[in-house]
Length: 211
Image 1 (cartoon, rainbow, N blue to C red):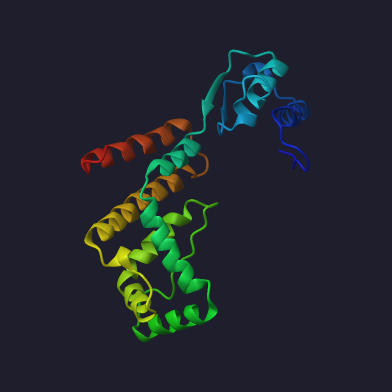
Image 2: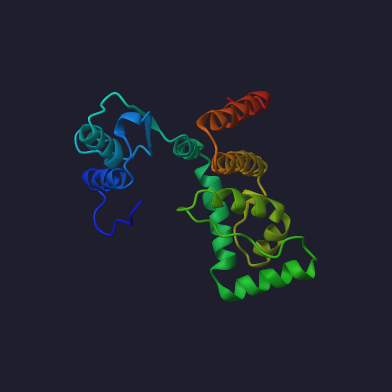
């Protein structure tokens, strides 16, 4: 699809898609389904891309679906455990955002001959980074606690049993979600294969006793 350098309203996106369909001589009557990410500009009942596009090609009966990968991503937002994630990010930022602390922490890990050279930053824009940040934080939790205590910083999330249990659970479940997301993004997959990944994921969680 052509790069859109100005606005990206439903009408703008529709115009681009129709232009490309004309350019490649694609027959609208052969369109079986339409999948979007569920944003207002895509699904708005009046000005959304879906409405504008189906009106433009004269095929109002085309099935419209919400992207399965986007749905899976949205599920991560209802996990909760906000306090746990805030504590992890606070510790990571304390270590990495300050040059002296970061150098001292890396030297500390090297002195201990740790399997990991550093902690991992968390980016709210790239939600998959949550799994990486939590996994590395969990694997380095003892070293981080020692370092933070020496710096006279609060590490209640690593000393309180309930907090540690919450951290372990959040680390585990986000890793499962990350693995699922990677599987869903494999190239050349049909929707039935993606559906299999989702069903397998749900069955695994039922085995774990998670509903």
